[in-house]
Length: 447
Image (cartoon, rainbow, N blue to C red; front, top):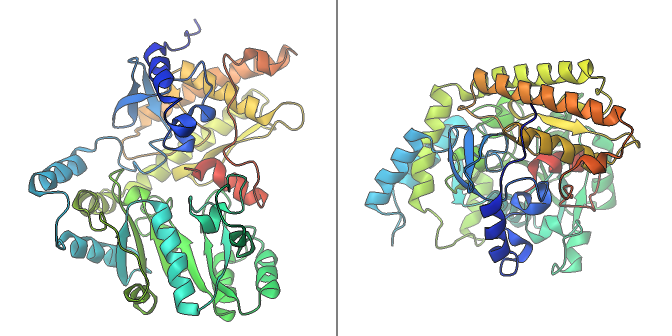
């Protein structure tokens, strides 16, 4: 028997209070109502444990969003929680420095190949932006070449359609290039000779690097006098303890880290070569909560646990099963042309393409709706955690089986797909993007 849709009475009541007093209704675009089927999906979560969450109406879900991907160990990890609570008893922030700043810096130097020094922020955008600032300070140049999603600051968002309030000059300083397309990067250098301060990119996302792409990007950047910055906000501590640079053997000049560094307790870090990092003695990066101790205490426990429990290997193992078995189901229901699980197993994405027959966002909305009906919270990617075990993967594959079977029936009915969506379909966060590869990355990366 097909389950009923979840009751979302309290969710709706809270949203009625929020929508007129909180711009966009949410603190984070990808957590807001436009990213879920409004009228069907819950709007507010109340608690989480391991890989499961409960909404304010008491409905339980197996979570694959995992708070936008920082929870590499899972919700409320007992070891991280204990470290945070112990530190809270001592104090969360102080009038002078705290030894934890040194402890965690030493941990990063020990585990991240590019790290010779570190400074801390709170969000990924803090450290991608200070990385760009360091590169500009070191090189005396203003232009930036970028690939992927890098946060909310002016230098990046200027080239999206959410750029109201950003001075137009930023659009002329940031230039997008395509992943696995060295020529598109070369063109940026050719058009801006001697003006590019850095190449900043997500080293691994959905696509695998071809023809030594990352090594060639590094060579091209250095040949043109630019620094190479890896945005490892997502890949750090998830793809490997030392991130994509450990996996690929390509070491950047600077690295931005966040998300998995502290399992959801706010912390980020910019790390890199001393020659570049110490430019921060002459350019400003300072704020009240720099060095705040709860995030540092979490990281001091989180990083060794990821390493000692070999968490990346676990994510790869269960993620490989999930990816392979999903694609078998898609083939079984003759849906492989519309949906495919792609990307690295530790963080795979369901690529959805309506092929001109269906609205892609309607396909995504229908799948999300049915997965929620079967107890899975999903926005097209799998942010796996240490807490996800084989039984959770089996539960998920059963939900996918039921969802794809239902989708096959809907398609065969020749009735409009929209009529089967029990609410408002999801909407994109960005509509203006520089290239397809950036769009693919943003589907899983956007905050």
